[in-house]
Length: 247
Image (cartoon, rainbow, N blue to C red; front, top):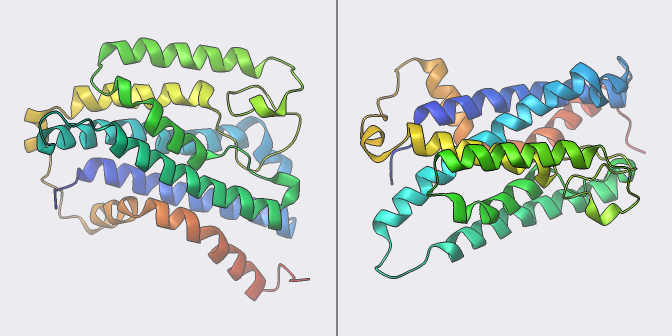
């Protein structure tokens, strides 16, 4: 098993903690009515969510470069790696479809049509042609972000375009369209190729012995599992405390 970069795992661990705290705060507003849930849907509240999610998305780009470089080193001659990343992307995207189904059943008023797992799954496939690029990914990433800002300003009644970034006229609990967020993935790819090149990679494994750092790194390594189980656990706590009734 290859060593992991503790810096990436630890940063992802920080994002996991922020995500759990954010969602718990949202649950207190949405289910308990402790404060106005509208705080999370615009302004500061929405921007906090974007920073947390954007961190995960940025780290996807960095991680893809490391994975790709290692796969290149071990692949048989003449064999393409595209199918490897297609399979991984489809798997993550299918997890997003599970979230879509779950929210459609249990919270139809905010069904997640294209959330962060949908985006990550699709981005893994879309990013494949760009994994060798460096500075070009900065330009391409910024172009994606500008396109996203433009699409978000359009008022088009075409729900099937929401995955691209056209602003939907319905509410979703989680919404991460390709534009602008694929641009953040490409910026992560640039940083991954710049910061975690092969020579630096060999010297990047010495993790601090601080328990807090190791705990964050462990949490970051299991971020997908935490993503799936944290909300049911949080809701279970609220149910046990009597704040949420099961009808």
